[in-house]
Length: 304
Image 1 (cartoon, rainbow, N blue to C red):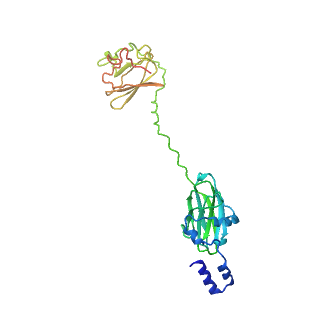
Image 2: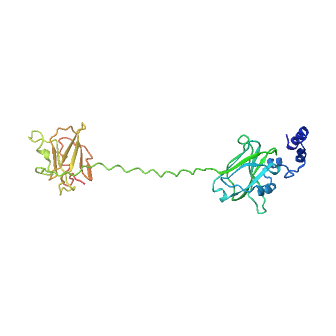
Image 3: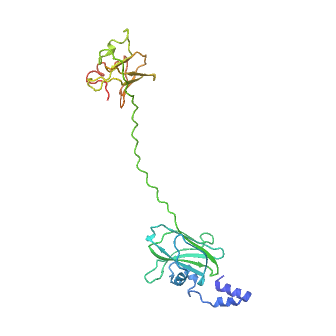
């Protein structure tokens, strides 16, 4: 029912003298509030007088228990800084006894007017209007208008907050593969063994088969490929085909040898911190590291 017809009906029913006064009172603007609600570009200059009366509202501020004034409209100025760079706005109106409509006009022009309505909401949250995520186009002064749809009396609360905008998570740095872990090395050992004789020779020419000192593996470790300096106190790790490991320590002349029974082929590694050296091939019987074609002169087994 339109506002004037409702007033006439109330006057007829209750014969209240004030009704006649309300009926004859001119509206705030002759175009009527319905025209404002139906138009997307209606000028809001009609609300300037009300805004001057009610003042301004800022982000984080609430207007509580506000009453509609002339033509059942309330209007507030709002100043936006930085062309929306501070984030979008959330505007909310709540009322228990009215049917409010929420509108935003602006920005203010040089002549002081607010010619364009840029946002409007009516009942998006039941009977409660909301403008969520509103980003004002430019910096300036805007007009926030709350109107009673039926131009009936009532009260409302208006809240203006800034939307919480989550900054995008920083991009993860490109994945850089971790360097391979340094292989464990064996600490140097003070060797008490002289190492016998003939360092660098093919030991298995004698120490195999029916020899009374048969060995299963033997060789000499040096500090250089030419075999000029023997390396004492290094650890030789031998793993046979069954997975059994034997550890030997090089003697003072660099020799190493073992009588432990093994299953060929053998994997051999020499270690003395911080250096490691692993044989690139396996060793077959009879296990002679210094044999011709292997670690003979010029190609000695060495660390580093």
